[in-house]
Amino acid sequence: MKRLFSIILLTLLWCAPAAAEELLVNWAAPLKNEFASIKKREYAGVFYHEGHLYAALRSGRIVAFDREGRRLGERRFSGEFLIPPVAAPGGILVCESNTVRLLKPDLTEIWNVPGKSPIVSSPLVSSGGIFLQFAENTLYLVDPLTGAIRANYTFYGEDPLSYALLGRPVVYGDKTAFGFSNGQIIFFLLKKDASSGVEELLPYYKYQTGGSAAVFDKKEFHDIFSLLPGAEGNLLFSNGEGGGAIQVADGSVTKRAEMRNLTLVELAGGEVLAYGEGGVLLLAKDGTVSRRLFATTGFVTGYVAGGEYAFFTDSLGTVSVWDGALTGRLTGTRIPQGVSSGGVWAEGSFYVLSDMGVLYSFSVVKNPKVQKILEKIKKDDMKDGSSRISE
Image (cartoon, rainbow, N blue to C red; front, side):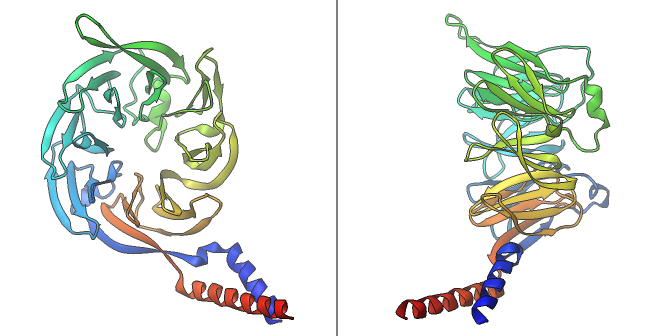
């Protein structure tokens, strides 16, 4: 009977793994004092760099913390932060409205590049330089050390601009692919004149994946136009109307309705994680849906792999912890308002900035009660096994 009870209890524990882990708050630092700004979504969020955390707020502030939650410094700018900071040679790249700045870890400025309109996608830091994309369909290629503009390109069209936040451009072979608010994907080739040394961004392939930008204006959440190199010869995309795959060689576009407003991330095993509107999907590299991880009435705003876990955040304020293989949800919590940006994993902790302007530090710990039960079952099994062997 004791043996049967142990088996039943062990089975129940395995069927409900959420009891074995807990998500605990290490510390929480409120950053907003103005009531009027509480309802503004914090799209930029938090960034980790060389042992420090940087919270970029929509009000134009960047606040630096150490991992224990002690405030190290702050800098205020006149614009807004809607795009997360990214690492770049020599420091931290931040996008303040229509100006991109490279900052040192102490928040002093190295260089800045102003545009004529807001920057609309996360900068792409590549071996060829830093690619910047602005709302008026203008691209810059800048030098990572000096900020000097090495090449630029602007195209004009009759479609109105949505001013949506677009997905980060991607490198595809010897070209760089950008998505635009009118549904176009354009592959650019960087060419350098041998005699003058002048560089040019030249459009090489153009694909129309959706209708006009008027579709984007009707969304309740910022639109996502995500790009990801897929299986051989494919480029996966997701926009405000749907998504799918482009066969780059012949220009054919395969539409998939379930891929609307999703961010695409390639996993270590070759699958593609797609999160955003309606929940989270796992895709094959050709864009076909393998399985749905979970559905939600909110908008899944972030995915972070951290140690043996994976973290998801959403616009309802849910922070979910899954096992690293994405086979099941382990635990989670809900924080006030929502989370409009992804978090970061650094040195054993998960950090996230809520729309209320609170910077949280979380840790996943094993539930000590459950662990004791599991250890006792293991010991009992070992005793039973050893007695049977001796007999």
